[in-house]
Length: 327
Image 1 (cartoon, one colour):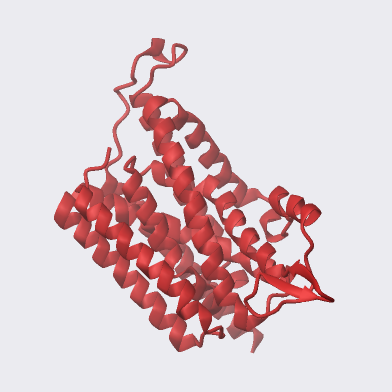
Image 2 (cartoon, rainbow, N blue to C red; image 1 turned 45 degrees about the horizontal axis):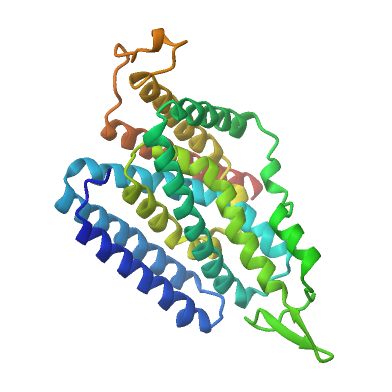
Protein backbone atom coordinates (compact mmCIF):
# COMPACT_ATOMS: atom_id res chain seq x y z
CA UNK A 1 0.00 0.00 0.00
CA UNK A 2 1.33 3.44 -0.91
CA UNK A 3 2.14 5.98 1.82
CA UNK A 4 1.92 8.83 -0.70
CA UNK A 5 -1.20 11.08 -0.72
CA UNK A 6 -3.57 10.36 -3.60
CA UNK A 7 -3.59 14.01 -4.71
CA UNK A 8 0.20 14.01 -5.05
CA UNK A 9 0.09 10.79 -7.11
CA UNK A 10 -2.61 12.20 -9.42
CA UNK A 11 -0.66 15.43 -10.00
CA UNK A 12 2.52 13.41 -10.67
CA UNK A 13 0.83 11.19 -13.26
CA UNK A 14 -0.79 14.20 -14.99
CA UNK A 15 2.53 16.09 -15.19
CA UNK A 16 4.37 13.03 -16.51
CA UNK A 17 1.62 12.32 -19.06
CA UNK A 18 1.76 15.94 -20.31
CA UNK A 19 5.54 15.70 -20.61
CA UNK A 20 5.42 12.51 -22.69
CA UNK A 21 2.69 13.91 -24.97
CA UNK A 22 4.77 17.08 -25.49
CA UNK A 23 7.93 15.03 -26.12
CA UNK A 24 6.21 12.82 -28.70
CA UNK A 25 4.02 15.28 -30.59
CA UNK A 26 5.98 18.55 -30.33
CA UNK A 27 9.68 17.80 -29.84
CA UNK A 28 9.35 14.47 -31.67
CA UNK A 29 8.06 16.21 -34.80
CA UNK A 30 11.44 17.90 -35.23
CA UNK A 31 13.71 14.96 -36.06
CA UNK A 32 17.39 15.70 -35.52
CA UNK A 33 20.60 14.31 -34.06
CA UNK A 34 21.06 15.91 -30.60
CA UNK A 35 24.36 17.70 -30.07
CA UNK A 36 26.61 16.82 -27.14
CA UNK A 37 25.64 20.10 -25.43
CA UNK A 38 21.93 19.35 -25.86
CA UNK A 39 22.36 15.82 -24.47
CA UNK A 40 24.28 17.02 -21.41
CA UNK A 41 21.70 19.76 -20.73
CA UNK A 42 18.81 17.29 -20.93
CA UNK A 43 20.54 14.70 -18.74
CA UNK A 44 21.34 17.33 -16.09
CA UNK A 45 17.70 18.49 -16.24
CA UNK A 46 16.29 14.97 -15.79
CA UNK A 47 18.72 14.13 -12.97
CA UNK A 48 17.79 17.40 -11.23
CA UNK A 49 14.09 16.60 -11.79
CA UNK A 50 14.53 13.18 -10.15
CA UNK A 51 16.36 14.70 -7.17
CA UNK A 52 13.65 17.36 -6.76
CA UNK A 53 10.88 14.77 -7.10
CA UNK A 54 12.53 12.68 -4.38
CA UNK A 55 12.61 15.80 -2.20
CA UNK A 56 8.88 16.33 -2.81
CA UNK A 57 8.20 12.70 -1.87
CA UNK A 58 10.18 13.29 1.34
CA UNK A 59 8.09 16.40 2.03
CA UNK A 60 4.66 14.79 1.51
CA UNK A 61 5.38 11.20 2.64
CA UNK A 62 8.50 11.19 4.81
CA UNK A 63 12.10 10.04 4.54
CA UNK A 64 11.48 6.30 4.01
CA UNK A 65 9.55 6.57 0.70
CA UNK A 66 12.00 9.24 -0.51
CA UNK A 67 15.05 7.06 0.18
CA UNK A 68 13.24 4.14 -1.48
CA UNK A 69 12.67 6.34 -4.55
CA UNK A 70 16.32 7.42 -4.72
CA UNK A 71 17.52 3.82 -4.31
CA UNK A 72 15.09 2.56 -6.94
CA UNK A 73 15.89 5.37 -9.36
CA UNK A 74 19.65 4.81 -9.11
CA UNK A 75 19.22 1.05 -9.56
CA UNK A 76 16.88 1.41 -12.56
CA UNK A 77 19.05 4.14 -14.10
CA UNK A 78 22.16 1.99 -13.80
CA UNK A 79 20.43 -1.04 -15.30
CA UNK A 80 18.96 1.14 -18.08
CA UNK A 81 22.47 2.20 -19.10
CA UNK A 82 23.21 -1.46 -19.75
CA UNK A 83 20.12 -1.56 -22.02
CA UNK A 84 21.76 0.97 -24.33
CA UNK A 85 24.04 -1.77 -25.70
CA UNK A 86 21.00 -3.50 -27.16
CA UNK A 87 19.40 -0.24 -28.36
CA UNK A 88 22.54 0.50 -30.38
CA UNK A 89 22.33 -2.95 -31.96
CA UNK A 90 18.60 -2.56 -32.71
CA UNK A 91 19.14 0.79 -34.45
CA UNK A 92 21.95 -0.73 -36.51
CA UNK A 93 19.96 -3.88 -37.31
CA UNK A 94 17.00 -1.87 -38.64
CA UNK A 95 19.25 0.77 -40.29
CA UNK A 96 17.34 3.59 -38.57
CA UNK A 97 18.46 7.00 -39.96
CA UNK A 98 20.35 9.03 -37.32
CA UNK A 99 17.90 11.93 -37.44
CA UNK A 100 14.97 9.60 -36.63
CA UNK A 101 16.60 7.72 -33.75
CA UNK A 102 15.59 10.21 -31.04
CA UNK A 103 11.94 9.97 -32.10
CA UNK A 104 12.15 6.17 -32.22
CA UNK A 105 13.54 6.07 -28.68
CA UNK A 106 10.79 8.45 -27.44
CA UNK A 107 8.00 6.25 -28.81
CA UNK A 108 9.73 3.00 -27.81
CA UNK A 109 10.31 4.20 -24.26
CA UNK A 110 6.68 5.34 -23.96
CA UNK A 111 5.52 1.87 -25.05
CA UNK A 112 7.96 0.34 -22.56
CA UNK A 113 6.59 2.46 -19.70
CA UNK A 114 3.00 1.41 -20.45
CA UNK A 115 4.02 -2.26 -20.50
CA UNK A 116 6.17 -1.83 -17.38
CA UNK A 117 3.22 -0.19 -15.61
CA UNK A 118 1.13 -3.30 -16.25
CA UNK A 119 4.00 -5.52 -15.14
CA UNK A 120 4.42 -3.51 -11.91
CA UNK A 121 0.70 -3.75 -11.06
CA UNK A 122 0.76 -7.52 -11.59
CA UNK A 123 3.97 -7.84 -9.57
CA UNK A 124 2.58 -5.78 -6.68
CA UNK A 125 -0.59 -7.90 -6.58
CA UNK A 126 1.38 -11.15 -6.63
CA UNK A 127 3.77 -10.00 -3.88
CA UNK A 128 0.90 -8.88 -1.64
CA UNK A 129 -0.75 -12.30 -1.88
CA UNK A 130 2.29 -14.56 -2.08
CA UNK A 131 5.30 -13.29 -0.12
CA UNK A 132 7.21 -16.48 -0.97
CA UNK A 133 7.65 -15.09 -4.51
CA UNK A 134 10.53 -13.05 -3.01
CA UNK A 135 12.49 -16.31 -2.85
CA UNK A 136 12.10 -16.67 -6.63
CA UNK A 137 12.96 -13.01 -7.29
CA UNK A 138 15.97 -13.17 -4.99
CA UNK A 139 17.41 -16.35 -6.47
CA UNK A 140 16.83 -15.01 -9.99
CA UNK A 141 18.69 -11.76 -9.20
CA UNK A 142 21.63 -13.60 -7.65
CA UNK A 143 21.75 -15.84 -10.75
CA UNK A 144 21.65 -12.76 -12.99
CA UNK A 145 24.46 -11.16 -10.98
CA UNK A 146 26.67 -14.24 -11.38
CA UNK A 147 25.82 -14.37 -15.09
CA UNK A 148 26.89 -10.73 -15.52
CA UNK A 149 30.33 -11.57 -14.14
CA UNK A 150 30.98 -14.95 -15.76
CA UNK A 151 28.52 -14.84 -18.69
CA UNK A 152 29.36 -14.88 -22.38
CA UNK A 153 27.89 -11.42 -23.16
CA UNK A 154 25.05 -12.97 -25.14
CA UNK A 155 23.00 -9.79 -24.71
CA UNK A 156 25.31 -8.04 -27.15
CA UNK A 157 23.78 -10.03 -30.00
CA UNK A 158 20.27 -8.97 -30.93
CA UNK A 159 17.60 -11.54 -31.85
CA UNK A 160 14.07 -10.56 -32.86
CA UNK A 161 11.55 -11.51 -30.18
CA UNK A 162 8.45 -13.61 -30.85
CA UNK A 163 6.13 -10.58 -31.18
CA UNK A 164 8.19 -9.08 -34.02
CA UNK A 165 8.58 -12.44 -35.80
CA UNK A 166 4.81 -12.99 -35.64
CA UNK A 167 4.10 -9.47 -36.89
CA UNK A 168 6.31 -9.95 -39.95
CA UNK A 169 4.15 -12.94 -40.95
CA UNK A 170 0.83 -11.07 -40.88
CA UNK A 171 1.61 -7.57 -42.20
CA UNK A 172 3.40 -6.23 -45.27
CA UNK A 173 6.51 -4.27 -44.29
CA UNK A 174 8.72 -2.28 -46.67
CA UNK A 175 12.50 -2.10 -46.39
CA UNK A 176 12.56 1.71 -46.68
CA UNK A 177 11.64 4.45 -44.22
CA UNK A 178 9.27 7.29 -45.12
CA UNK A 179 10.22 9.85 -42.47
CA UNK A 180 8.28 9.21 -39.26
CA UNK A 181 5.35 7.54 -41.05
CA UNK A 182 4.14 4.10 -40.00
CA UNK A 183 2.30 3.58 -43.31
CA UNK A 184 3.39 4.35 -46.85
CA UNK A 185 2.16 3.65 -50.40
CA UNK A 186 4.06 1.82 -53.12
CA UNK A 187 2.47 1.10 -56.48
CA UNK A 188 -0.96 2.01 -55.13
CA UNK A 189 -0.65 -0.52 -52.30
CA UNK A 190 -0.41 0.30 -48.58
CA UNK A 191 2.58 -0.98 -46.59
CA UNK A 192 3.88 -0.56 -43.06
CA UNK A 193 7.32 1.01 -42.83
CA UNK A 194 10.12 -0.51 -40.70
CA UNK A 195 9.31 2.23 -38.14
CA UNK A 196 6.48 0.07 -36.76
CA UNK A 197 8.85 -2.83 -36.13
CA UNK A 198 11.46 -0.56 -34.53
CA UNK A 199 8.91 0.99 -32.14
CA UNK A 200 7.70 -2.42 -31.01
CA UNK A 201 11.22 -3.85 -30.83
CA UNK A 202 12.57 -1.09 -28.58
CA UNK A 203 9.46 -1.18 -26.36
CA UNK A 204 9.20 -4.95 -25.97
CA UNK A 205 12.96 -5.46 -25.67
CA UNK A 206 13.05 -2.94 -22.82
CA UNK A 207 10.31 -4.93 -21.07
CA UNK A 208 12.47 -8.05 -21.39
CA UNK A 209 15.12 -6.16 -19.41
CA UNK A 210 12.42 -5.34 -16.85
CA UNK A 211 12.44 -8.99 -15.80
CA UNK A 212 15.74 -8.09 -14.10
CA UNK A 213 15.05 -4.54 -12.99
CA UNK A 214 11.47 -4.79 -11.69
CA UNK A 215 12.24 -7.62 -9.22
CA UNK A 216 15.33 -5.61 -8.17
CA UNK A 217 13.31 -2.53 -7.27
CA UNK A 218 10.68 -4.60 -5.46
CA UNK A 219 13.59 -5.61 -3.26
CA UNK A 220 13.92 -1.94 -2.27
CA UNK A 221 10.26 -0.93 -1.98
CA UNK A 222 6.84 -2.58 -2.21
CA UNK A 223 5.08 0.70 -3.03
CA UNK A 224 3.81 0.50 -6.67
CA UNK A 225 3.86 4.32 -6.98
CA UNK A 226 7.54 4.49 -5.99
CA UNK A 227 8.36 1.53 -8.25
CA UNK A 228 6.67 3.14 -11.27
CA UNK A 229 8.03 6.66 -10.78
CA UNK A 230 11.54 5.25 -10.27
CA UNK A 231 11.18 3.56 -13.65
CA UNK A 232 9.83 6.72 -15.30
CA UNK A 233 12.65 8.97 -14.09
CA UNK A 234 15.25 6.33 -14.95
CA UNK A 235 13.98 6.12 -18.54
CA UNK A 236 13.40 9.86 -19.04
CA UNK A 237 16.99 10.74 -19.90
CA UNK A 238 17.76 7.47 -21.62
CA UNK A 239 17.47 8.76 -25.19
CA UNK A 240 19.95 11.59 -24.54
CA UNK A 241 22.26 9.14 -22.77
CA UNK A 242 22.04 6.94 -25.87
CA UNK A 243 23.50 9.67 -28.08
CA UNK A 244 26.02 10.84 -25.48
CA UNK A 245 27.43 7.44 -24.51
CA UNK A 246 26.75 5.47 -27.70
CA UNK A 247 30.39 5.45 -28.72
CA UNK A 248 31.65 4.87 -25.17
CA UNK A 249 29.42 2.01 -24.01
CA UNK A 250 31.85 -0.72 -24.93
CA UNK A 251 34.57 1.12 -22.97
CA UNK A 252 32.65 1.05 -19.67
CA UNK A 253 34.47 -2.18 -18.93
CA UNK A 254 33.65 -2.51 -15.24
CA UNK A 255 29.99 -1.46 -15.36
CA UNK A 256 28.73 -5.10 -15.45
CA UNK A 257 30.65 -5.79 -12.22
CA UNK A 258 29.01 -2.84 -10.49
CA UNK A 259 25.58 -3.96 -11.70
CA UNK A 260 26.37 -7.50 -10.53
CA UNK A 261 27.11 -6.23 -7.01
CA UNK A 262 23.84 -4.27 -6.94
CA UNK A 263 21.72 -7.17 -8.26
CA UNK A 264 23.45 -9.69 -5.99
CA UNK A 265 22.97 -7.48 -2.94
CA UNK A 266 19.27 -6.88 -3.69
CA UNK A 267 18.80 -10.59 -4.44
CA UNK A 268 20.17 -11.54 -1.02
CA UNK A 269 18.06 -8.79 0.57
CA UNK A 270 14.93 -10.22 -1.09
CA UNK A 271 15.71 -13.72 0.21
CA UNK A 272 16.21 -12.28 3.71
CA UNK A 273 12.84 -10.48 3.48
CA UNK A 274 11.20 -13.69 2.28
CA UNK A 275 12.62 -15.50 5.32
CA UNK A 276 11.25 -12.77 7.60
CA UNK A 277 7.74 -13.33 6.22
CA UNK A 278 8.17 -17.07 5.62
CA UNK A 279 5.11 -19.31 5.47
CA UNK A 280 6.60 -22.22 3.51
CA UNK A 281 6.23 -25.40 5.62
CA UNK A 282 9.62 -26.84 4.65
CA UNK A 283 11.51 -23.77 5.97
CA UNK A 284 11.66 -23.34 9.76
CA UNK A 285 8.44 -25.31 10.11
CA UNK A 286 6.47 -22.67 8.23
CA UNK A 287 7.37 -19.92 10.72
CA UNK A 288 9.16 -16.59 10.01
CA UNK A 289 12.92 -16.61 10.52
CA UNK A 290 13.27 -13.61 12.83
CA UNK A 291 16.95 -14.10 13.67
CA UNK A 292 18.05 -12.57 10.33
CA UNK A 293 18.61 -8.79 10.59
CA UNK A 294 16.70 -6.37 8.36
CA UNK A 295 18.68 -4.23 5.91
CA UNK A 296 17.71 -0.53 6.28
CA UNK A 297 16.98 1.42 3.12
CA UNK A 298 19.88 3.86 3.74
CA UNK A 299 22.27 0.89 3.67
CA UNK A 300 20.79 -0.26 0.35
CA UNK A 301 21.22 3.24 -1.09
CA UNK A 302 24.84 3.30 0.11
CA UNK A 303 25.66 -0.04 -1.51
CA UNK A 304 24.10 1.04 -4.82
CA UNK A 305 25.94 4.40 -4.92
CA UNK A 306 29.31 2.88 -3.98
CA UNK A 307 29.03 -0.11 -6.35
CA UNK A 308 28.02 1.93 -9.42
CA UNK A 309 30.34 4.82 -8.53
CA UNK A 310 33.41 2.59 -8.11
CA UNK A 311 32.60 0.68 -11.32
CA UNK A 312 32.21 3.91 -13.32
CA UNK A 313 35.37 5.45 -11.85
CA UNK A 314 37.39 2.29 -12.49
CA UNK A 315 36.14 2.20 -16.09
CA UNK A 316 37.17 5.83 -16.69
CA UNK A 317 40.63 5.24 -15.13
CA UNK A 318 41.11 2.10 -17.27
CA UNK A 319 40.02 4.03 -20.38
CA UNK A 320 42.56 6.79 -19.71
CA UNK A 321 45.36 4.31 -18.97
CA UNK A 322 44.63 2.47 -22.23
CA UNK A 323 44.65 5.78 -24.12
CA UNK A 324 47.98 6.76 -22.52
CA UNK A 325 49.55 3.40 -23.46
CA UNK A 326 48.37 3.79 -27.05
CA UNK A 327 50.28 7.07 -27.49
